[in-house]
Image (tube, rainbow, N blue to C red; front, side, top):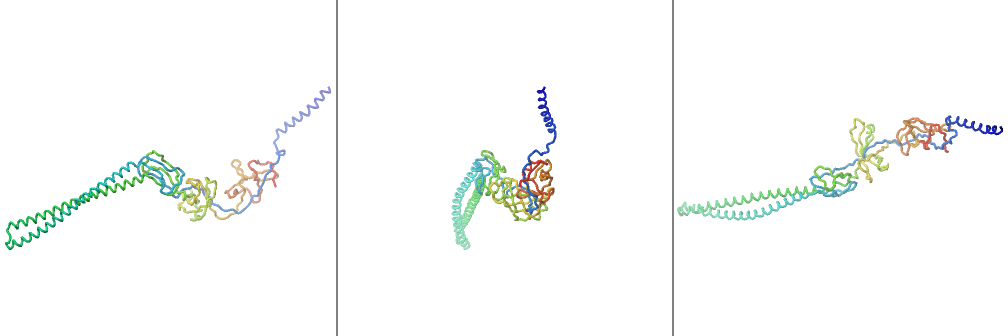
Amino acid sequence: MKFKKLMLLVIIPVMLAGCSANENAGKPDTGEAREAMKVKTTLVELAKTPDVYRAVGTVTSGKSSVISPRVMGNVEDVLVAEGQQVEKGRLLVVIDAREIESRVRQAEAGIEEARQGIEEIDEGIAAAEAGLESARAGLELAKKTFDRYENLKEKNSVSKQEYDQALAKKKMAESGVEGAEKSLGALQAKRKQIESRMVQAGESKKQAELMRSYSKITAPFDGVITRKMVEPGQLASPGTPLLSIEDYEDYRLEVQVDESFVQKVVIGTEVDVTLDALKGEIIKGRVVETVPTVDSASRKFVVKISLPYVEGIRSGMYGQARCHRGDIEVLRIPAAAVVARGQLTGVYSVKDGAASFRLIKTGRELDGGMIEVLSGLSAGEEIIVTEPHLIEDGMRVEVEK
């Protein structure tokens, strides 16, 4: 009997404790037992900050070229690779020019043949000129003899036979001069024909040599090879792209700027430029051109910003330009203090030892990791900056001094 009473005294308190535990399991956790999270805070400040206009765009090259051949032929060799810097006149691609070389030799043979022909004609012309000179001398003598016999005939001092012989000699001399002149003229005409063929052969040689020079493709300016579109053995034809080259010392960032800002963009204005590919390195650019036409859809116009030579810049890169317009006063907080809860953006403030979620509307990103606050906070308010993404609304927090 005593043993039963003892067991009841032990079991009843245990049952009561279990019931109490089950009752507490269904109640919400008020957070009173949880240790308060230590946090650091900062004050919302109204401060002067640079008024910066940001515009995004793409890097382009002020001088670029797609290199194509002017002659058809198989590519013998490609002497450059993508990304390689080359100087003006550097040999880039060699095209098989054996057929063109044959044309050069054929033209040279034509020139040599014409030269030999002219030499032979010149010998004939020299002989014809000597014959003509002799014929003219004979004609002169025949004329003088005939004139003397004609005077004697008038005085009846010469026979008719002698007179007729003098006349016949004169006519033969005239005929000889005429024949010599015709022979000389024919030789001179033939020489002109050979000269014409020689000129044509010379022009053919120049044309063939020019075509031969086209088989060796060189860099049109100092630049960098941005694309290679041909390999040795491939057939190249006029107009087919082989390589792309651009001037690596004349890159520009082309950005879209709101039309309301057009009056403030002045040629020569210095602009801070950052390129994502260069990990945010600030590059000092300068406005060199503004396109006066405004796009009717976006209401923006194009501004071209010249960039200095920086290793690694390539056309097509994404970049941002920042134009300083002076200083303005804005409410600002560290961007790290801002958290997103679904579609909501806010920060945590401290109220009665607990974190309180505050909805805010943010504006521009500012320098130094700060962000502009358009609404939801006032200057001097205290907000949490310690890992706000780990905080929940109502969580107990303790501000570290």
